Length: 111
Image 1: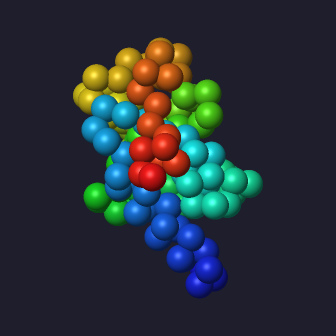
Image 2: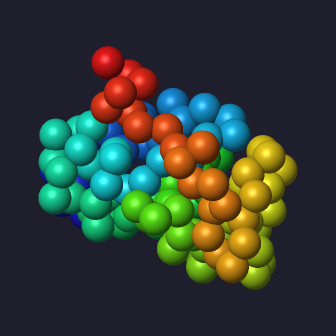
Image 3: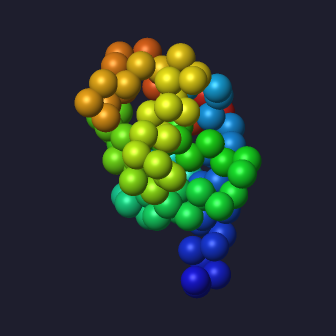
């Protein structure tokens, strides 16, 4: 992996670690916070690799509509959903119910 990607991934992981329990954010929100608004897909790649790092709550990062697009990167069929539901977040048909209620925007919360 290129060095600049490693640095970007580390920045993504640092933001992801700050997502509060019972809250979720989106790939795009992390990208915007890092000043790279067009890099939501790259944030997704970083989160794909986060499964091997224990202290990163990758299950709390979803797409802009609250869909669990990264669920296939978790062991088992419903682990991502189970983790979210254990934090009090309801999921139906692979989408967070009342997404706005749980949405955490690092650009607003970390400023």
